Length: 110
Ligand code: FES
Image (cartoon, rainbow, N blue to C red; front, side):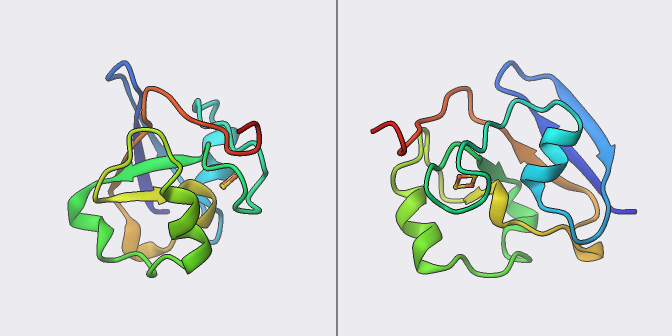
């Protein structure tokens, strides 16, 4: 099972074993990680924003245009930012580290 590490805004780490095929957002909710995901994966909120470890960023499928538009609205955007609801766990991602930004902005609320 691929291992995924979340680093919370306060620096604490949580290493978990993920199932192939689930999204980072689903995983975060399963383990109580503070990743809101207000629109439940319909790419309308950006509250599932995570910052991906550089070494793994290029292994991810390229973001869709909709994802990029939504990321533009995300709080604390970085060069390796992605939407957690769009990252599907695969074996290739074993060991991935994801940083949860200290804040988020919900585009649904404006
Ligand atoms: Fe809203 Fe990912 S959950 S964009």
